[in-house]
Length: 376
Ligand SMILES: *Cc1c(COP(=O)(O)O)cnc(C)c1O
Image (cartoon, rainbow, N blue to C red; front, side, top):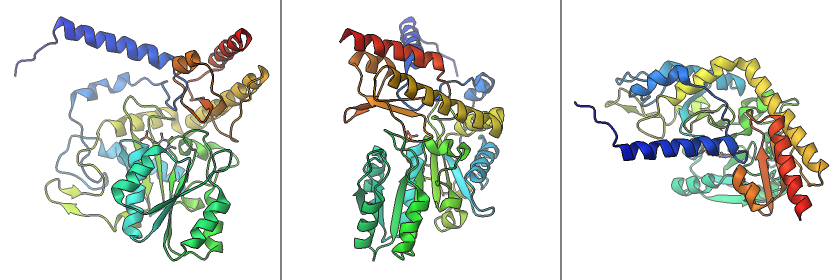
């Protein structure tokens, strides 16, 4: 086939978009997305139709993809999340939302009559997914820091104790990065003598680096989670949205269904699956290694502590949850919000000190905010 080229006008549109993306990537600080990556070495792969159809652990007739890398990525996270040695499985998703959908789907297959509990600070996509899955659910109130209100959770579960319990725990809420404590949730389940339960951990941002924190937050398999979802484009960084979901293999075996057409098992949500994103994640894990990732996490925590202190220093009532990289403060001017692309809710905004953020950028922000305070 003849290769066509873009018209001069279309070429201009493309250049314009690139400039726009470059400028806006440079400025943002309000969303949890790392931008310190260089995947030049992987560019040749963009010329191939990579597709990891079906279950990554079961070979597929279609053989242009990155299954081997995908398996390594899942093995890495199964170990980081302290899954039992022979009882883990997972795949690279299109993002944290799909991982959460998958966790809920497994929970529903295991407990068709279960009731889902999640806090009001839960990510907006969870409600949509509960709707898709048609699962009954109850919203639990939060404490002031955004963490689930354990008393409300206990009272509400007690009222419905004839039903199996499905918990969507936030390992870092979207607005304040509050972590629900899975150990505390387990204590309540025990107290109420609830035997049938499933705990899914939404670790989109915080779950990606919580294993590097001391004391280690209660969020993983050893703490009682049955599945964990994270985003790949947040803490790790990726040009396209992606994520990882890790579940117990014994649970996924209950929903596996063999499909002749692809010669694999249809254990994932979508049909075709991105064959590039597992490769990008693999590349990042290999480049940093576990120690590099730990350093990345500690750097972010250090910068966040610095930002909190500096903002307080100019009289802004900044605060953050213990060991998190999200710094909350009262909504600043529209100009600052637009420049940094800051989300805001109920009078609060935040910056998220992703690994690419350095102290000089914090100093710059503090200067700008101080200038506005003086102008008032
Ligand atoms: C970002 C986020 C999600 C959604 O993840 P995507 O990768 O954007 O799909 C879910 N939960 C929390 C707490 C998040 O921060």
